[in-house]
Amino acid sequence: MLIKIKTEKVIEQPMTELQKAMLNFLPHEQVKKFRDFPHLVEPELLNEVREPEIENTIKDLFDALHERNTPKLLKVLQGDKKRIFYAFKKQLEMKERLTKREAKMLLRINQEELSLLTLSLMKD
Amino acid sequence: MDWALKYRPRVLDDLVGQDVNKEILKELVAKDSLFGAMIFYGRSGCGKTTTARILVNELDAEIIELDGASNNGVDDARNIKDIASKLALTGKRKIIIIDEAHMLSRGAWNALLKAIEEPNSMTHFIFCTTEYRAIPATIRGRSHMFKFYSIEPEVLTNYAKHILRLENSTIVDEVLELVIRESQGQVRDMLKLLQIAVQHNLNTREKLEKFLALPGVGGMGSFLEGVLSGNSKLATRALKTVTTDLLEWRDRLESLIYEMLEDYYNLSELPYTLTQTAKLRELTRLYPPVLFGKILDYLLRITRAETARQMFYVLATLGVANVN
Image (cartoon, rainbow over all chains, first blue to last red; front, side, top):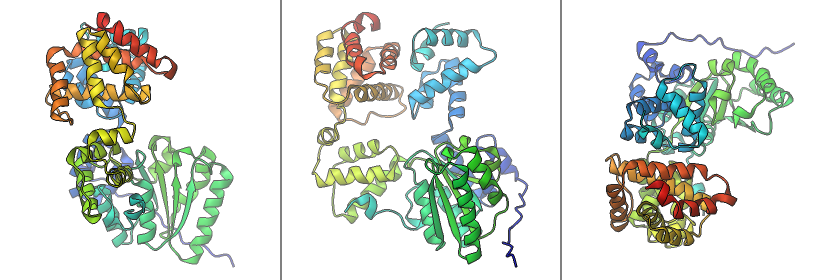
């Protein structure tokens, strides 16, 4: 007689409002487990602020460059600066519409490698 | 004995940092409701595999541990699945840890999918990875992800002090600061460096830098001063004293410039001796950020070892005309 291994059906619980809010910052697979741990949401988000995913870093980087806000730029540039630089360059190359300033940045980066600090201080 | 080995955590409570993950996992273990598939994601050395092994220990489970890089074929995945099914019959809980999971082939993932889709309470998959986006969406959708963050410097410092107490040892603050800095949020590296500093009696920052062949900050300050002030002799003299790998020196110089600017904008303080800090602050007070930006531009272009020294000399001798 064949032995059937008992398997379990996994029913995914609907997300709480707090979890839905978390989705603005964290991927779904990371958020799911917080249903029963609402008190740990804040520390997790603080962890994420400290060590954000590259896509969030790039978003903040665009803001800092547009605002020409050097202190903000320095805050964004925590971690692997080379990785951030090349991810930013790739994002810039993939953007469908570029502002005049972004186009100028891309042109300058393609001509010669420029640091993000120089880009943030670049005049229009 | 190697401190990293001696103080390797064996239960969840021993884990340093990772408080959120620790609390969730502890509760899941206590309630006997650990997820069937989990992704442990984070940069190297943050404790992903260690935590997975701790779970094996806490649950008194059987372990199957595989490296995704060398077991990435369909046959390998089928083997994993077969082993998991057979072990399920034994009634013993088992944890299958797949390290470097992002290296598994699509075929291997497909073979694993059914096992993950139809979990049983006695089998748990843990996929450890530094790149969770490389894991197929079908697997990610059926898994719970735990992100492992670098350990905060304060937490790491407190832990280092705790270890020093256990070892009846002391080190001076500036050495401890360098140990924490160089370990970059990783417990294992911190313990290794701490043990080196204690056992070799490296009681100044300079001694530890020299022992580890780390580029010293003093020469970099002189180099920057030379470049910024137009004193090419000073800059080239500073370059000639570099005994470490030049590309490593370049990376360190880049970090130093960012640190100086962070200090200038009051975002963080320079972690060096009073004399060194005063010298570096003088430079950011005298020269505008745009000049530091230009030096960073030069540094970005230095990527190959054979041309690095040449590029540095260009920066040192001609840099003045271009930079200032």
